[in-house]
Amino acid sequence: MESRWILLIAMLSAACADFEPVDSTAELNGREQMGRGIAEVGEHRLRDHDRFGNRGDADDGGDPGDDGGDDGGASTDDSLRLALPPGSAFLAGDEQLGTDVLSAVSGGVAPFQCAIYRGNGAGTVPLGVGQDWNADPTGCTISGAMFGAPGNYGFFVEVYDATGVKVDVPVMYEGPPCDTAEVTMAPAPADLVIGQPGAAHTFRIDVTDIDSVADGEVCDTCLTTSVLTRAPLETAPRLDCNAPGDVCTDGETVVQNSCPSENAATATRFVAVDAHDPVRGDKPGWMTVDITINYSGAQLAPCGGKRWACHVEVLEVP
Image (cartoon, rainbow, N blue to C red; front, side, top):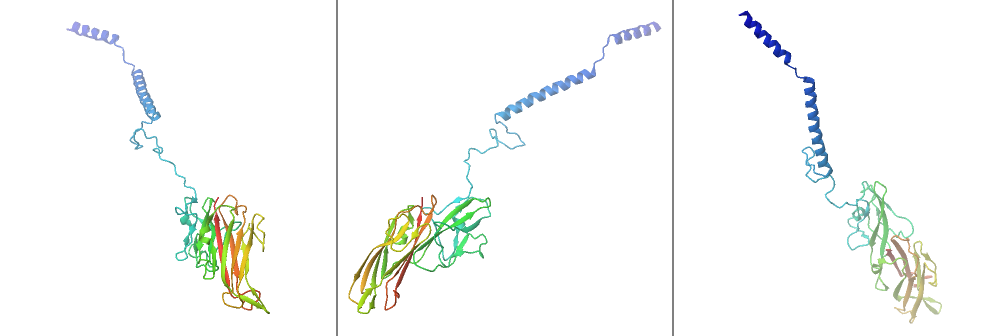
């Protein structure tokens, strides 16, 4: 019996001597290396997807092929710019409702501020009209009821945005027509609102029912004309119309009838604006001409009683 136990113990000892334990550290390192290799393969695959734009990852919500930019959409220019009504070269003034200057621009960065332009080719703000600072602290609303000489009045409103970009908005107010029962002018101001820069203009003015002035035994027909312009045009009496930039009266004809009867005389007067340099260089500008005719004496000196006036603004557009 004892011999059997001795033999069994000897066999077990021999088996244990041949057994080699597993190196657990090496096995763990091998598993880590395998995991890193799998991760690297996955990372390379992800980089390949990114490079070709095939994302579709759940966390960015993108579709395959979406690179995050515009889908071919055209870029828009949002800078401040003039945006007048279609077919118009100016913003028409509204005496009843007021004139919203910002309606003639688009783009830009709020807040906006407005100012009336002063300088060559500025035109004329009609009497009774101006910036309504009470209703609009930006100065971009023009309001008021105009009065003064018949004709049309044009001016510029400068619109500034928050970045300092500026746009000039041409504004035109139309007053009563210049023609009366006794005095007519051609062309009418409304027919000359838009003109070429530096173009010459000639106005024919026909006057009827000119009263005569009795000077002793001589009857004189009284007719005086004055012309006023805005810079850079020049005004002088009885100019010969030869110098560029001059405005003159020219070609007066008067028909004398019996004196002192009614409808004693008729007259035709020409007011000419010669060819001139553009009033505002390469920018739009208003050419301004004021014409006044006194055509009645009635024993008053030098000539009074009947008076006709017309204010003309021509927008010169390069």
